[in-house]
Length: 594
View 1 (cartoon, rainbow, N blue to C red):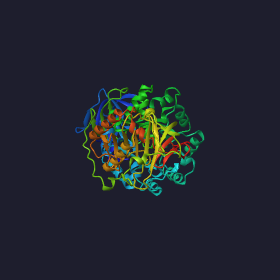
View 2 (cartoon, rainbow, N blue to C red):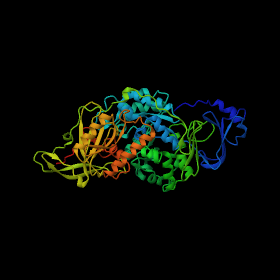
View 3 (tube, one colour):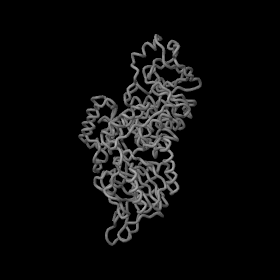
View 4 (spheres, helix red, strand yellow):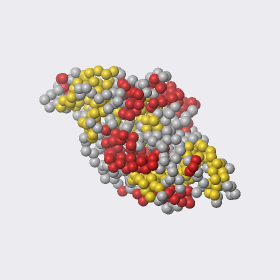
């Protein structure tokens, strides 16, 4: 976490009234997440920390800035305990602008995708960029940057983080957690992960989890190994079972995975203690960050689902801080804590009118006051989409056994509401040995192409759910391997889209009839934009509009496309650079069944 500048010993004299506070927030209604109550209280701030709460008249001096909080609820800065910032396409600086506006003042991230493409040096660069913003970072060692899809038998990217790098990161001063090691390699006793777990526990570094599709024996084993949280529950009973063995539930409200409404029933119907629950976004596309927000949106959804407003705020602040043992720094408005305070007009609507981060007003009436400048990025972050050769339409052909005029085929099922993609079976026609898609039944081609210049592999399959009437969508951002993935109605547009991605250095592109309808250039590692925030949002909105006009009904089609790709234990049938894989069986699956 970015280190506060104000030492705790400086707070003593202010709290005692011997010295003056720098700021006093007066006449506010304090949302006290420590006692689960709302009460009148003033707040005295020294530097970037809180010195006193309650009656603080003794702390006021001639140079104290008094800020009128009358009519406002004073809420702790929101804490995001699990988010992959790259899903927002923005560089760190612009990402900070986006989430600060919505009241998030602390974010946990491990920069796993940067570690996949650019290795340790890219992770280190993003940490340093984070430190130049008002947003605080809880750095979690990116297990995924090393593991990728190893447990599924898929080779990792060539320049990614190594197991030795993971161990070294344990000693980084910024390290406060281990980021989502999936359960399968843990229950299979992968020595790299188990040794890392032991070292982390010795250092009191918490291990956040990733337990999608876990059964009861594996759940117990996972918890016994040291995992303390999970963000993958979509089913109420699944969340209840995890909570009962001490796994803290991060109720996800992300792009393509809006789970808070359902999981809130654990509190409202099962009456479980809220202290074992928090929120996260996990994945937040640009339009979500800009139009809805992050933890603030999860709080709103929980309140509408029947959760007490103070309880929901506690879940979005103190509970998340405690997950990383940071409750003495963040998560509440109390003496000694970093001065992150939101002025909220109405708790149920959770409309934020002012944001104080590190003792400074950074947002007023939805507008960022701080001037944040992006750094100059190193050359190695550019031109990272490297195809072995230009792809051709024929590269996307799937071939049937000789003599077949039709075949039964596995199809990836996507619905835009879940990251889970079930197996569908359909009979497809064969022409000149090539298995044909069937646009009339919404069965389209989907392919993954190696973009690291390593193998040149192309994995082909079929997908249903996207409902495209024409054209293709391609992106260099997909789960865990960061290869290029493309879905389309015809091979010509698919090839055009993939080759164009290499030319622009990565990103998202929407094409039809050989023409570019929209694109989001992501030249930094093929993952992030170096455009201003407003430009990123403009391009994202245009891309989503173009995708909708092609017929796709999904709220977050690019996120859904990314999770049609192999992603550890997230089931079931997924595409990877070698074809299809059954994530639940951890084995490759043929497209053609006969």
